[in-house]
Image 1 (cartoon, rainbow, N blue to C red):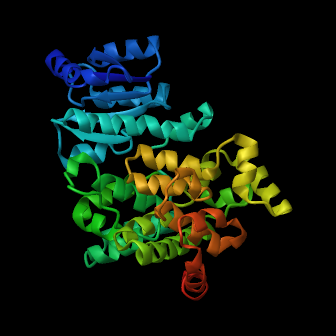
Image 2 (cartoon, rainbow, N blue to C red; image 1 turned 60 degrees about the vertical axis):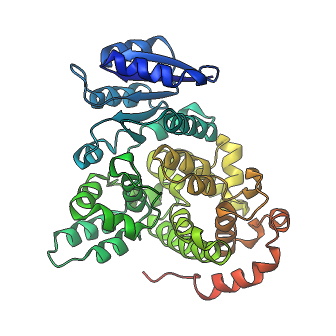
Length: 392
């Protein structure tokens, strides 16, 4: 049963939530706390999978509460339910909350978001890894590109198109920008997955705050020495995967083209997490993969039960990115795990990654099951001629 802690300073609001969500009491263990201090006391007494907190509360604010939750119980999903739907709040809390809900939200919306946050926890069975990812507000960005973005924003002659193109080259910044624009604070009727559209919608001021707020891991150059992961090569691989996945998705489902690009761009975010936070764990796995010629994800499964694909998907899901993208990243090596009878986004990403790296990784049985094996020759040629390399 999912344990959920709802926090608000108004008892009537909590009573309303309890009544609205009463029909879910067989699947949820719901606790309602008046204010931050009571919430902390409850958290000390029992485990909660999800905390849903208001922001504007006397004494301990919701922001202060969620800071304590992240530090003390990082594996707990943190959701904001607030009537403060302004951009300043969104920018300030983006590093703290995994998802945003604007007041008023109907019971089904709350149920969907909370259930999704809990479902994502099944991606990571290892408590230590779950806590590691839970503490992360953002992914590492390459210092060189970060400087370029900052300089471009300071150039009075820059265009939003220039900014979108530059941010679209970096998985970390692209993920954060898309996360922001899809939060409830901006009231988008549909999910935005095109980075350029997201940048254009947010505007220069918000994008500047997002970019400058992203953690830059100053030791990124040392990561290559410690783990064998070259951030520059990883970025180029992500750009190739983004282009090919988008092309494959567009050839099958034109409306998935943008999702395909985003999934490809974020395909290796889990490697960024491991390389920057647990290099001593990643290094021997990479060394063994290179020495034996075995796929890295198989070795990861033996070492730590979880792969970088699932680690990255867990973080992206907590950020509230589109579920199709999260599932594609999680199942890039095992598309059949979704039990889909149709060739979807996970399949597109799976094919793109295999064709660009090692075709022996293709799950031929899955491709036959979903009826696209006869299209491999065309996609293989596309990979070879168009996406084999991406200009620096």
